[in-house]
Image (tube, rainbow, N blue to C red):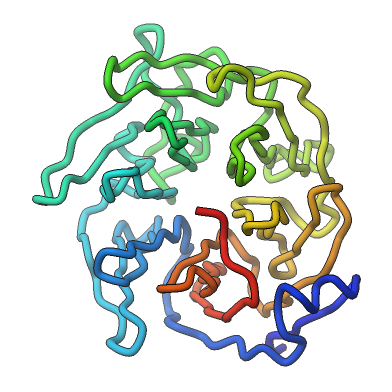
Length: 300
């Protein structure tokens, strides 16, 4: 199966060309995740969780291993100072890599107990760090290390990096996973991938209103994913949600209408926008990473 752009709504034609070329950037990995773009340097990073490495890609210059022994890193983001923020399965912590390469631990416990295995992470414009904490990294040794769960649930957290205060902002998820803010940061989208270990489990993205920049209210189901789960996703400048699924990338408008798809031969785990104009869509999909140029920029 080759990549295919599928239009479900004419507005998708404004977001990506029907004949857009999808190219395979790199392959031969085990389970790729956590793509992030760095404008300073014009490069992407992503994780291969089971192989315990982080890769770096400069378009036109090839792919190289950026970090060995990456503590089974999963999701990444960039903070407002241009530093790498990482969710690590093996160490069950959230870290920040400074410009000098030094690694600082931002969070590894809550209420005196170890976190489950931080999964995905975003940084808000006020520098607070929001991340999900499902148990995937402690369920087996494949993406981390088998261990008992110490937390009473699988939470979504808000971290103030200045004070170190870590607050639970959502506690009613089975397996919280991907998350992203709307362009104006008034809505936070969070996926629940509970179906991964329970056929009757949730497989949807929920939307929450962000109150006072620190509380989530009015939680509701934004979209239910029929093909697999929404592992990770990002938004464009118009507020459309581009999400991973078992058949590729699906794009939904802010009202939850499916606009179109980028179908791929592998299960997609995550994606991000990048490049100088923020229109390069980098997609992590099981053993491979794909790239396609959109007609719309990602939300910064």
